[in-house]
Length: 228
Ligand code: ADP
Ligand code: MG
Image 1 (cartoon, rainbow, N blue to C red):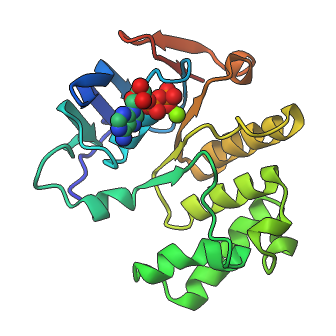
Image 2 (cartoon, rainbow, N blue to C red; image 1 turned 180 degrees about the vertical axis):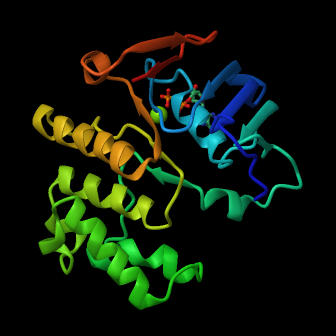
């Protein structure tokens, strides 16, 4: 990607609309996400949070509007979507780990299959990530043998295995108890601070963000972006 120099925002989103059967799920959102930020998106169920996040990753094609990634228009037919997505790691609501693969294999599959790393490099990086999240001893376990909070950590490690610049997390904590939620938020902040990765987290639990937010932007359609 021909990234723009300087400190152009990570994402500039203008007049973003995504309709399903002519009904808007995301309705005219204009905002920006700066490099190095942690941004929480809050809003009730059905308010378009997941759709907005999926548009950021080009998993949904916007109906209209523009998304610039580091100054470059990505909502364009000329965008190499696979190349763009390498910069944007995604953690899904239900973790989506492969049940038949070990934890180590879950983390190494993407960098090896895409040819970005040799198997040896991918394993070395996965082991570093597993140490960072405190689950190195689970590397040969299967997802079913892990708790919800542990699976969420593995899903985050897997999203980091391609060295993304941005991490998008859809309901990263909604299935977790309060203590585990706190631990995942601490991990997310650690990833942001130590690895310099921009993080966007969706939640419908206002309580999750109450103690960490310093800035709230209310969007036109009732979605809120909270920058911490
Ligand atoms: P949230 O994540 O805030 O709960 P969603 O983005 O999942 O909200 O959904 C917003 C609206 O878009 C909902 O009314 C939902 O039913 C609708 N929607 C989401 N995805 C699709 C889809 N693939 N096809 C049709 N409607 C959809
Ligand atoms: Mg959702």
